[in-house]
Image 1 (cartoon, rainbow, N blue to C red):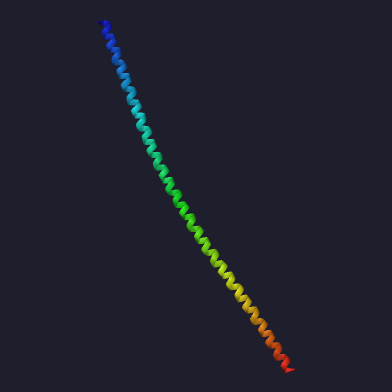
Image 2: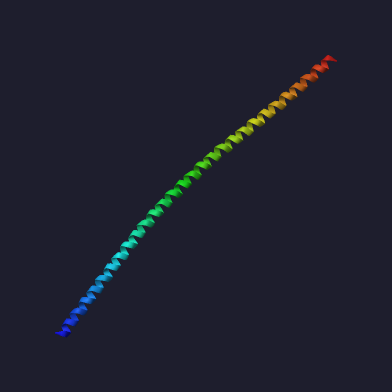
Length: 104
């Protein structure tokens, strides 16, 4: 009897230890699952931030392109006005010379 009781007690102790290991493994699994979920959330937030930063860069690039085109247009207009002014100045000089020549 004593041997059977000791064997039953040992079996009960093994069963209790096994159940404890199963609970610890389940708790570790739940903790790992929660951490994975948290990491997925962080990755999703990081992806959203990266997408927002990329969109901002694209908007800034488009804005810079518009500003560059406007600067090119302003430079072209300035060159045209400078050429017109030079032409008008040449025409005035030629007219003045013609008037002076006819006055002599």
